[in-house]
Length: 218
Image 1 (cartoon, rainbow, N blue to C red):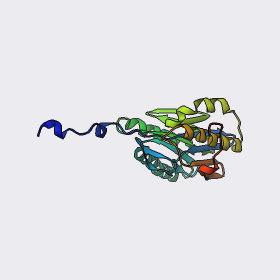
Image 2 (tube, rainbow, N blue to C red):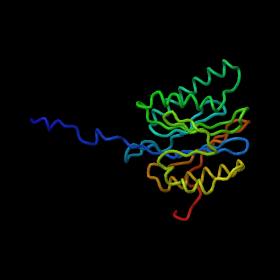
Image 3 (cartoon, one colour):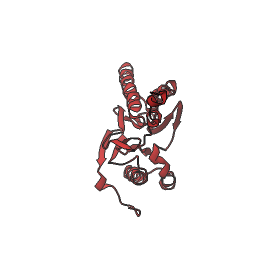
Image 4 (cartoon, one colour):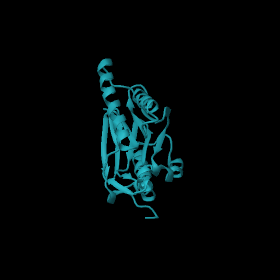
């Protein structure tokens, strides 16, 4: 038989495309994070209800995008390091410290890992904070979005975001943004996970598909 008979099919060497939608926004006194729940590999949906909001500490969470395995690994490493750090200093870690750890790992292994994490939380010094981290980038922002679904909602978040929104307004802002992204992006879908963090701790909520708001195109 010729050597051509043993050539691997083209799809084996193609990059597997993944998709998601993640968002985090600050309010006066805390932050709200949100994500969809669909995990995709190319054209296939491999998990319909994955929670992409991972705790790094009691009042610090991260939103995961990119390769699920890579992002979860980074979150688990940082979670362990923050636990050790909090024991050493006998106090809760700062949100910036958590974001810096994520940034350092992302930069050190930028050639091996494919992950983008948004870190958000509350601490005693600076209150609610949102940090975008990507391949060594560390940028504090009033809100941040990521994943394939974010391309469909840039206009929405730019138009609807306002400074000094209340907790309730931020929660509605996050759910509306996720709903619009899931309606347009084939790689985003399922339910909406929302985490609200303030000085009292973290509150997790799952918004089922039939409970999501309806928009004109739906």
